[in-house]
Amino acid sequence: MEVIRYETISAFYDEVKTFLLEQEDRAQIMLGHCLRNKDRVWEKEQPFLATVKKEGKIKLAAMLIPPHAISLLEKEESDGVEAAPYLVDYLIKENYAVQKVYAPKAVGKAFSEHWTAAHQLEEKVLMDVRLYTLQTVVQPAVRPGKLRLATEEDLSFLPQWIVEMTSEINQLMTRKEAEEYADARVKDGFLFVWEVEGKAVCMASKTRPNVKGIAVNMVYTPKELRGNGYASACVAALSEHLLQEGYEFCSLFTDLANQTANKIYQDIGYQPVCDFVEYKFYEKRTETPS
Image 1 (cartoon, rainbow, N blue to C red):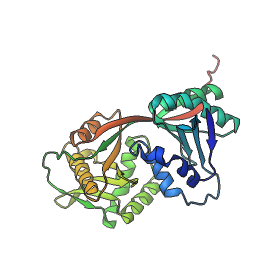
Image 2: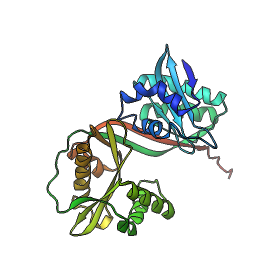
Image 3: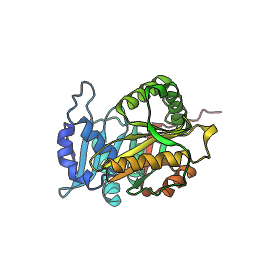
Image 4: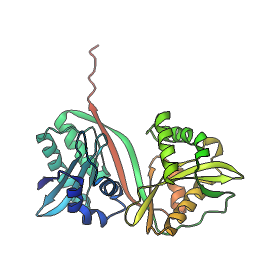
């Protein structure tokens, strides 16, 4: 197998475009970075962009945009598992530091095992998630309320909701980060709320508009308002809205440990596609002699 490095996202995208578009749902994060960063000028550390090929065929694509995890994507699981050690060996040869990897589960595990063995490190699972896609909404039971775009007035509570939500999924944002995120999403028209009798009770955001698909994230209902079907109603209405805008499918990721979320999304038409994992690497603990 051969590892091929690319100097720019534009050059990388030219090579992997077909590979990504043939699996746009699974490729949405890598594809989104390509579409939105292909003309970006990198002032500091450059992104790492590579493919692993065998007989001219792409077996694995890799992208690391600092400070994020290295993202890996294969088309066939066996190809990706076979190619991962070759990528690790190349990164070691180039003395390239990797702190985290995000990939479909089997490929992520293959990369992690080879990387940790080579560096005498340990791995920690940061995210264990399932990707779902939807092409037709199955309408949930009728709930009171309506979907609307979030407004600047909603910034009085949205940052706190974001802090609470990201804390629950171990991806905590600081208050300042949450305020900046909410402000940007409101200005972009990406953030929505489900409103009942004039009160916002749930939020959700659209994100990663790509070629045929778009994703839904930041779904959150405050604890005291849960159990009323607001999340189902909100996500169903937002998904229907996005399909009516012309997207062929919507997608979302769920924490595999959250059985409630996995069930309600399937109940409104989301179908499982693939499981992804994110590992973080750290030094092995050494026991203190007694």
